[in-house]
Amino acid sequence: MRYGFPMQTAMVTAAIRAAHQTHDDGRVFRDPFAEDILGPEAAPLTMGLPGVPGYHMLRLLMPARSRYAEDALAAAVERGCRQLVILGAGLDTFSLRNPYRRLGLCVFEVDRAKAQSDKRRRLLRLGPHLPQGLALVPAEIGGGDLAAALTAAGWRADEPTFFEMLGVAVYLPPATTFDLLRFIAGLPRSGVVLDYAVPPACQSPEGRAVTEATMAETAGGGEPWIGFFEPAALAAELTALGLSELEDLDLQALGRRYLGKSVVGDGEWGQHVISARHPD
Image (cartoon, one colour):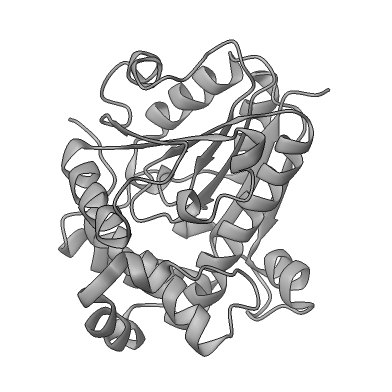
């Protein structure tokens, strides 16, 4: 089987970021291009969001995970990193907002060829050229030679690289995710931020209800969730790979960090974001 970023989910994710700008004043994550990248689809998608399972929870999770990833990227840039690889980029807008362009940060967006063709069309609708420093890398995540695809786009394996994997791991077999993490860990001064889902059986009743409704929705659209991780086991695997600088935040912790309060009840809600990198 070949794995690519689910386009339906990419559209909904962008719509949630756009709704966060409108309804929450972008207080967790500012993304002035979230609506622009959607174009005419923005209005109908945003209007349909209340019907998405766990929508109010997602209005925290989606912006918060992006904020967390870009905070970690900022720290990596400060340490000298000048390469960002976004796996399963979908309709991510960082290349339009890149505050490190003058420092030479190059952005490599990896997604399947069909998604990249759509992304190129959307970006060229916003301007005559692709954003400076952006390379759209057509590749099936977990289905080919990622290093070769990146190298062909100008990426250098001997230079520090920060990887972002948001909304990716749930669509991949765990073995494929571990292969990607092993590849990242094998690079000098590399780091990664990814989000993941805890197995439904390990979640609180409230969290499991939202997760199972979401799984039914995505499976109905041909995008089943197949990758789940237990926090302790994932941390142990990352540490074994040499990525020992770890931080794992669940929904409650994300709320406290970016809103000063938890916006969900106690217990395990299933959604986590984790950062890992080689120690200095």
